[in-house]
Amino acid sequence: MGSYDKPPTESQPDLTILDPLTDRELEVLNLVAEGFSNLEIAKRLGVSRNTIKFHVSSIIGKLVATSRTEAVTVGLRRGLIIS
Image (tube, rainbow, N blue to C red; front, top):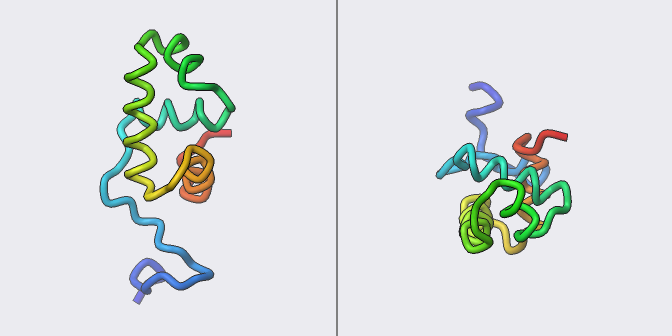
């Protein structure tokens, strides 16, 4: 049985993402991690603020986070954020 077959423990959290982030969501998550606001991200990507709000909400849901900050933390743990 490989290490990937073992159930998660408190010291080894489950890092499986049931619904993977899209490329755009990964891009938005990385910009959130850099400290950009929704408005700044929207301007940078050439989309509306509401579109970014939707992406951030989707990211939070997919990562089972409760805030932008927690989503970044989870993203870092899962290797989703390029530093």
